[in-house]
Image (tube, rainbow, N blue to C red; front, side, top):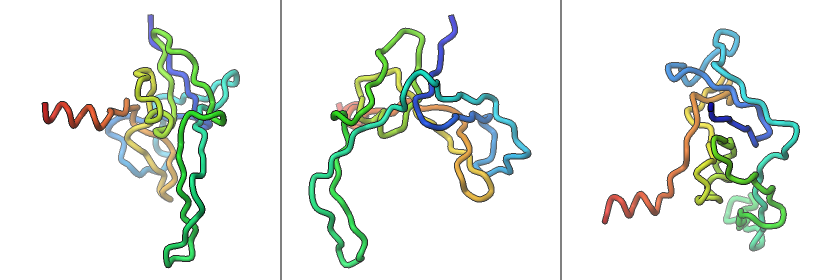
Length: 137
């Protein structure tokens, strides 16, 4: 059985070969695959909660103290299912460190104007705390 990839982001995921330069003219490069968001599932998002008033430390630009998490405004992720990988934003994946079935775009490919047009694959974010424990047993 072939694993399935389900895109829970609001954007089509265009996957390019590993040797694709990081900036390309999109009219000259064809993606290996395009994975579109399904119509039958909402985008996976995190809720956000503003924890404090905005500050403007000598810049005149508001800076808010915000927490992101799995509160009421979050979209519920589908259950973990054998053979199914879910493509989500990095923020969503980091908020769910217990989910080994979440993938994030990796190896950004941009057009000549600097706009993101795809990636060379996907990654599974590692818990930095577990990496530190491995380095210092």
